[in-house]
Length: 343
Image (cartoon, rainbow, N blue to C red; front, side):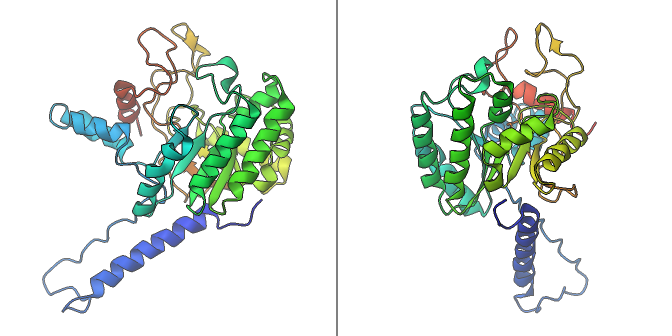
């Protein structure tokens, strides 16, 4: 694994800096930092999140729209809008450098680390919802290099190509060797920025049942040069199950490889049946809830962070009549996730 400051230590360092600045500010003025007689001591503001909270997110804009007419719902939806989430990057008419330019600049001004998700490999998703991706291997390599150029020197966390390695293990792609070579190249290119922490996606406990096969594919995809792997991206599996699964993968690698877990929608775990209303239960299942809040202080062995990688409230696809297309903001689904959080 690359030698870099662990996320947990980075979070502690940032929190310490924030508290130091606060205390220094309190020490200024005529009272010399002492609390005047008869006044209560000020309560220190909590340190800002380590990861970037986008003030222009879909949930934040929805809160603004609902504040005057649906005040209670707006307050509930702040459970999403005030938390750090990831920004997904796909190929399209807008160059990737333009997709991230303002986002990275805003995160830098906030003193927070943005989370980026690349989702643009050729044959991504193997024909499931959200199919597409770069047209050729060469186009993908160019795209990754353009992203690396935009990132260079700016601290970011990158979740690399959700589903790509498990799909290679399943052999649902035309050329498995090319798939794993492209991932290895992406790890190398993004790692060369000197500022990106890169996590290869490894699916979830219900996908590839044999951790040894998954570990072998991760090795070919460059896990030794990455910062670890990611689990449960856009899925609903509970954190304890992901923790056990992650340890099995890590043990099959070297016993020390760390990982991150997507907890954005796993508060109630997965839907109990494989289908619901005639569609796969991984797609917009009812009754789900927000999971644990994003943090680098996980207290979990070999877990660098709990992250909200899938944006809570974005559709998984139009799997049933009336459901939005994949990636489209769905405020009522988001509200349900927030309402059931912590129940």
